[in-house]
Image (cartoon, rainbow, N blue to C red):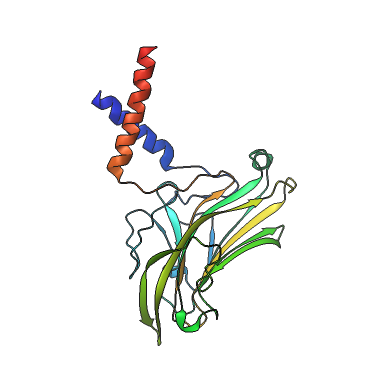
Length: 248
């Protein structure tokens, strides 16, 4: 019986650890790197694909783990110094993309340092741009001062200096899913997604973004649980199913 529970738990973890996302290559970053993506800007050296074991940023108190699978992308870090970073990829629309429902999803999160010393003026920000055949057709934007849409959580306190610049401020975090309906696209049309994060325009306050689950398959962000609870839940669920089958 113990072997059965362990096998069911392992199978459950394997099935959920590596979700597949269509339209874009490596939409869940499960290769452990940025394969398939174009990473540009002045903050590329600060960006990485992270796991649940990746250390938090200085001053960060809210632990943020991959939303889907074992990996997700993090663009930039808490440091300021005028960094801007862009992650992009272009995909051609196929019949399978249209048959899947014709929607693009991005599980995103962002931590932005609130520059209370210059509220409303050039704060750190995060944005998503969608292009059809090279032309901008949709965009999303959020910044540290206005914290658009509500639902922001206090994630720590930043105190940074470097390169002759420096700043302090509360770190605010928000996680959400961006969705775009491309069902009106024709076969062969190209869809480009560009995700961008930037420090404040005065150089003293940083911002960093988390990206996962990018593609036509919606995978709800996972709720962090201790690994022991995951194993126990998977095992007990499988055991209950096995017992029901035995009664039939």
